[in-house]
Image (cartoon, rainbow, N blue to C red):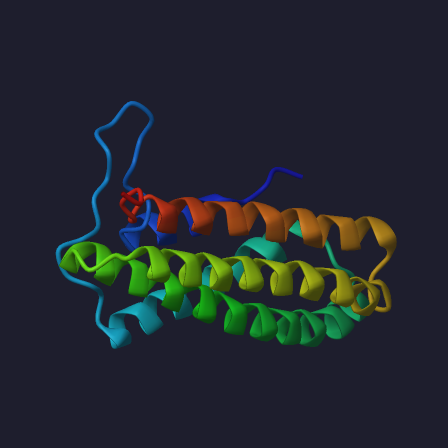
Length: 167
């Protein structure tokens, strides 16, 4: 099966998240932040595209699908909550960077928050392994985690390309 990445890649590009290319000039933070409504709409579109990519790449029987999708939706809801927390920290960083108010205390605090969110994401992935294993065979569970890792990498690259390097 050939992975179906084009829908998510297109969504990221349309969201304005993928801008940096190797060898390009450093990317600076956008002059204005997205409105909360625009950010929420972008997140909703990315979640919808994520689900389409998983569906296109994970061959499920009807019985597997009926058990998997509610489980996956619960998992994504938990991960989405962590994503929102993570992005809120990044938005605070971008704002402080734009305003020139970036302090060492803020840097330490924000890094601690980002590391805590990363730890919670890893714990959530580990905790959900058994739930996925209860509804899918082992190889399909591995495929779910591979797809999630790849999709997370696409989104992370897009978001990171929007942030200036800490100075």
